[in-house]
Image 1 (cartoon, rainbow, N blue to C red):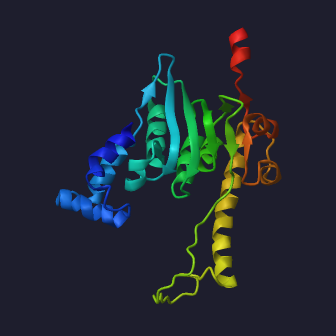
Image 2: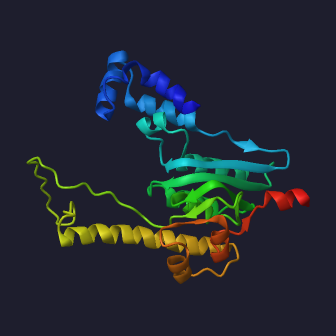
Image 3: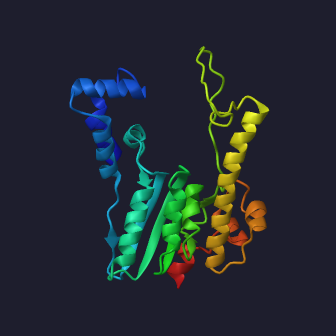
Amino acid sequence: MRCYYLAEKYLNPFLKFSADTRAIADELRKISPEMNIKAISTDINSAFKHPYTVDQYGTCHIQIVGSLSRRVNPCAGMFFEEATTYSEIIEQTNRAEDDESVNEIVYHVNSPGGEVAGVDTAAMIIRQVIKPTSAIVEDMCCSAAYYLASQTGKIIASSPLDEIGSIGVMMYLPGKSEDDSIILTTAKNKNPDPHTDDGLKVYRDRIQSMHDTFVARVVEGRTAAGLPITRRIVENEFGQGGVFPAARAKAVGMIDEVWNPISEAVQ
């Protein structure tokens, strides 16, 4: 596996010292003073990049797997088996759109989601593709992954056990620190305190805005695919942040089809 190769290459000599990110960087520099985190990040992004694939029928297969982000985090990339960057999805989508040998684009999705930053740009690139597009769920299509899949012309679950949904946005806010550090700002909303009602409202408004965009994109994508999906349906019937098994997701319009291997074999 690529992640094991990276862990062996960069971490094995000093795993016994510390799992702290800064300590890891320090140990890496001891091994090779010329080594820098940017170079490691570039190596990891290259290792996790999925090949551009076009089959004999003119179908381009693009992977949307693992954690999604603008760039693969250096430490996460070493420990998690799969990851996909939004830039890779954009690059391969544009390439497939311009490739005269490609008749359609299929996105293979198995992801719990990922970062907000970058997802909308990738989603809009997928939406603007003129060639036929579809997303095949291969276990999980949640959060940011569903954000992307909802922009294709058709969403297909490969198994009744596939999980779809998790439409919503999460934000991590650290707890109160015990140290005496002080942060000064000239604008009250520059660094709001989440432990106050006013500060918490600022953060709630921020994620609500992100959530509203998420829902709007799902409505736009599913409507473009020919389904009568409204904001009310997405907000009330698409799980409210939860995940649905494939059959239930199809029943409410989140996906279009659930493959049945037995019936396919009989036919």
